[in-house]
Amino acid sequence: MNNNLDYGIIGNCRSAALISKNGSLDWCCLPEFDSSSVFAKLLDDDIGGSFEFLVSKEYFISQAYIENTCILVTCFYSEDNSFEVHDFMPRYKKENGDYYAPPEVIRYIKHIKGRPRFKVKYNPRLEYALDKTNTYIKKDFIVSLTDKEKFDSLFLYTNFDKKAVVRGEEITLKSDGYFQFGYNEKLFTSTVTNVCLELDRTKVYWLNWMERTPTYKSYNAEISRSAMTLKLLSYEKTGAVLAAVTTSLPETIGEVRNWDYRFCWIRDASMVIKVVSSLGHKRMAKRYLRFITNLIPHKDEKLQIMYGINGEKQLTELQLDHLKGYMNSKPVRIGNAAFLQRQNDIYGILMDVIHQQLVKFNTDIENGEELWSITKGIVWVVNKHWQEPDKGIWEFRTEDRHFTFSKVLCWVAIDKAIKVAKILGKEHKLKKWLPLEKQIKDDIMSNAWNDDAQAFTQSYGSKDLDASVLLMEPYGFILAKDPKYVSTVKAIERDLSNDGLLYRYKNEDDFGLPSSSFTICTFWFINSLYKIGEEQKAKKLFDQLLSYSNHLGLFSEDIDFKTKRLLGNFPQAYSHLALIETAINLSNITEEEKVKEDMH
Image 1: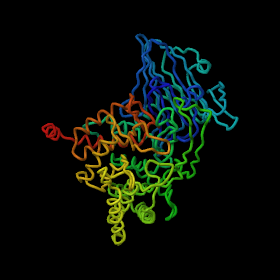
Image 2: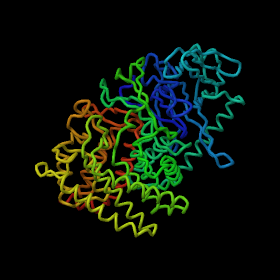
Image 3: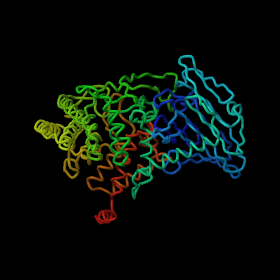
Image 4: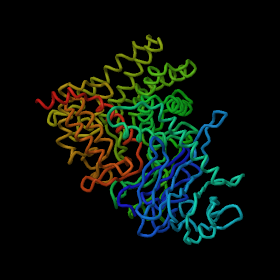
C-alpha cells in the first residue's frame, strides 16, 4: 500500500478514478462520483479490487500529466523495452454543444520501444466489494457481475487477448493497445483508432479549458494543476462541486476521523466557485448558482450545510464493516450525518459568491431576480438566527457554541447583501440592513476578543485559538494592519503553528485532540502573514508547504506534522482553492518589495 497518497486523479466531471504512481487503478466509482465503487483497493488492499500492470524488476516507472491536461501518463521503461499507459476519462464538446462524458475509463497503451512484457491484474469488485464479483469472457468484451445483494455490471473492451487479460498471463507488446472499461455495454465495438481519437479530443478539451485560465509569473504550474483539479471535482449534470472524490481516508492513521467527502458542502463549493470564477471560468459559476437556486424553493426554507451531488437532502451515514479501511483505519463510512447540522456561516459564504457574480459577470436579469430573492431570504434567516449558537465550520458533533467564524460570516452575509442591494438599485432595504450589520459587528468586537490571549478566539468566552478567525481579514471584517488582527495572527502563530504547519485548533473535540495539520489552515496562515506585511516569511512557508504535495502536485485534506505524509480525503477541493488564492497573492510580490524587506 502506498505510504503516501501517491495518486493521480483522472476524471470527466461525471466521475473520477485514482491511479497510483505505479499505474495501479485503486479507486473508481461508476457511473457517478457518489456511486458504489468498482475498484477500492484504496480502502482494502485485500478485497477492494484494482486494475494493475505488473512488470519485472528491470523496469523503472515514472508518472506525469501531459501538460495543461488531466491525462495521466505512467511510463514503464528498461534499457531495451518501454511502454506508456495514458489514463483518462473521455470529455469533450459534441457538435450540438453538449459535452460527451461517458461513465468509462480508457487506458491507452503506447508502445515506445523493444518488446515490453507485462501482466494485467484486472480485478473489479463491484458494489464496494460487498459480495463476490464474477468475471466472464464474451465475444466482444469481458463482463464482471455481482447480483447477490444488488445487481451491478462492468464491461471491459480491449484489443489484447481476453483470456490472457483475465488469467493474468504475460502479454508481449508489439504495437499500441487499449483497455476501456465502463458502466454501459457499448453499441459499437472500439478499436485502437477510436480510442486514439477519444484521447486526442479529450486532450484538446483540456488544452482549450486551460487556455481560458490566466497565466501567472510565479507558481503558474501549481495554479494550473490546482485549477484543473477543482474542475475535476465539479459535477457537470447539476453544477455541484465535491469536497473530494474519496470516502474514509483518515485524518490520522488508525483513528476514526474518516468521513465520506463525495458530497457538495455549500461552504467548500462556494469557496471553490469564487476562486474558479476569479480565474474567468464563468460556466462553472453559473451552473453552481443554478444548483443553489434549485435547492431553495421556499423563501423561508433553511439551507442545509451540504447536499448530495444531485441535490439529495438525506445523506444517511452507514458503515461498511467488511472493508478494513485505508492502512487499517476503520470505519469506512458512506453517507455523512453532518447534513443534519446547523452551521450559520454558510449564508455569508454563499452571499459572498452571489455578490462576486453580480460584480464580475453582471448577471442577466432573469437570474438577477432569483438572486435578489435568495439575497432577501438569506438576510431574513441571518436576522432570525445569528444570535444562536451552531456547530461551526469544523462540524463539532457535540454541543453548539457561539463560534467567532460563524458570527463573522453572518456579518459578511449582511455586508454583501447591502452591496447587492446597491448594485440592483434596491437602496430602500438599507434602512433595516445597515443597523443589523452594525449590531452583528459590535457583538463580535465585544465578545470574540480575549484580552489574555490578545486575539480573537474560537468562540465567545473561550481562550482557545482557531485558524478560521484568520479569515476575518479576507472577508473584509477587519483591516490587515488593524492591531487586533496583527496580534491575532501572531497569537495563532505562537499557539497553532508547528514546524510551519497549522493545527485547526488545539482544544479537545468529540474525538480527542487533533493530531494532524489541516492543509487549508496553513494556506490561510501564509496569506495572513503576507497581508500583515511579512511577505518573505510567507513566501518561505509557502514554498515549504508546496514541497509536501505528492509527486503530481496534489494535496489531500491533512498533513502529518512529523512525517509530512498526506492524510485525509483526496484530492481536496479546500486545499487546492486555498493554494490558488495564496499563490496569486504571493505572485504579486515585486522585486522591489524583496529588496526592501532584505534591508530591514
